[in-house]
Length: 211
Image (cartoon, rainbow, N blue to C red; front, side, top):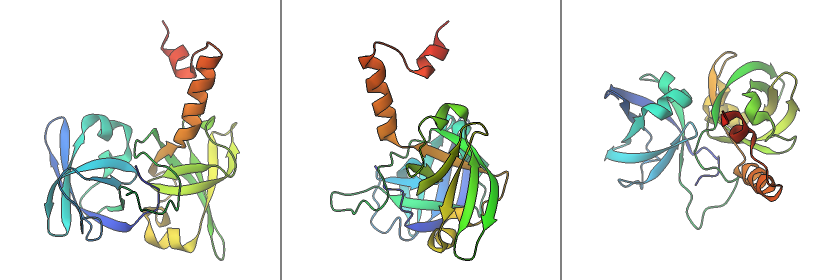
């Protein structure tokens, strides 16, 4: 479990293809400062397991499923990545509850800079739009953000990025057209599931899966 408060901007050092997986090595001195094999570190919002640690780097195995459904498949040596260690019992919950399980990838549509902040518009899959509400939470590339507006017709939402977020995360340099990992608020998904069962119905995904 994570909070969506990025601790460090790391750098991809190596990507080693292994058939249906990739071994990803990331430089992140703070993230690995107390890391042990088996610990969890979120990389651009994806929960990965530390397989090896060597000095200021850690290596994790990324399965094909993750490569296909997240933006990690587009990484290359030198790519910056957002890093966050898993929460502990004494961690302050500065963001919101984040699982590190990416729901889908979105796409940056536009950026509107202002004097002290920047409004970013992101396109998301229509199936996720129902989980978003203005002033609610969403995780974008591992960053806990507050939704400003939701446009159901356009299939987009906006978030405001403060200077701290712009300078300390990958969102400061993401350009229109680039992909971002999205994780919606897990509480919203649980509420939907419980209401569906209470009504004796099924979720939209289950309805789509029916023959």
